[in-house]
Length: 516
Image 1 (cartoon, helix red, strand yellow):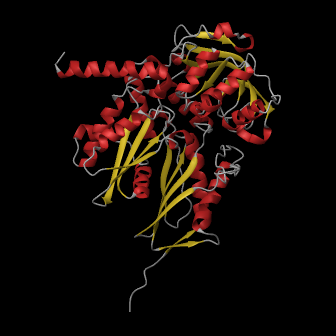
Image 2 (cartoon, rainbow, N blue to C red):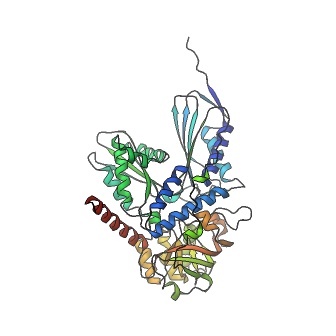
């Protein structure tokens, strides 16, 4: 007679509680390994704009950790990897995935630290917000053992939108494809972060390999010190060097560090195939692992915040900064601003992103009046987190501006808007419109949402209340830091910055090779 293997009983309530606590934890605590890597990048960085951007991310991270508020306003799409031991019995009245979704619901609706719900149902048509960020994306694997191992992450839309897949010929170079692809991604994925590559299996397996490997510890410095012992490790080192040599830098401003690590995972595949997936991880880098063994819910201890470098706001205030009064701004004034300048904005600005721009354009095209006068105003592409307590607004970092490119010319031509603020580069059509209408574009630092929110002194709903975080608000700001990204002549820092740093790094590499 076969002996029955003892089962471990794990309650569904422990699963739900653990997932909820994990999501709250990663909303305001960066992984310490990322902070150490970013602090090293900050010390090494020679590009002034990139160093400033990294410094803002580090300061923001420290503020978010102490304030227990989100690192980034995009609090992410929840992705869970669960390895369920086959000797586990789950005590619950609802399915396993629903236990996880209930944890997501509790985390995102937490009254003390509400997280921005970004998930929309019906992706083809209505795209209505589910209001609680469910459902999560859950991957379940049955494994030997008597525990459930979880990896819980919150993946931002800006970096997720830059995921790429291809099927190469068996003899093609993975490294060349990855480097070429990263070079074409722009900076909407919010570097400095990570690049994760999955190779093999099938199309969906390659993507899963890349997504799961992204959550592994950052160890590129240790790997570089000891040297590669496998083809995967050799590829990691090659990609780390080549991607950083692109000069993209923090926020795409040009600099030494674009990635703090590169992950590579492989799986057997068909002899005729070489599936390759690439997924970037943004500067938020939110994930945590834990295991349940039947003894109760997981417990998450705060990290040692002494590992966070003490970067102060004055250290990030460059010399020669231009102070701007938004309430007296004129078209003549904005046309004098030049690419690469740092500006401190004070006064009133408007907010509006994808859904608001779509509605504005529909009203313009229908010849209907707009609910807000944009003449002489500046618009900030942002969807903030809900405020709590005495906050004026929750974390309020910029969203990826290229999503507004299709609306830009219509809005500029019809409204008299004088400037725009967002994140990352603009496309050729948007830059052409910027020049035509003499309406420059500025960037705030993605990954500094909590820091930016402290410069917002009041917030008032103006229009489209039903759009939630995408509604149009009027913010009053004081000394909000931005960088001129595309000036009225069409000069773009996202072109000139990386080009300059590619040349500098190539020259340094040649000098080292000849012993100069």
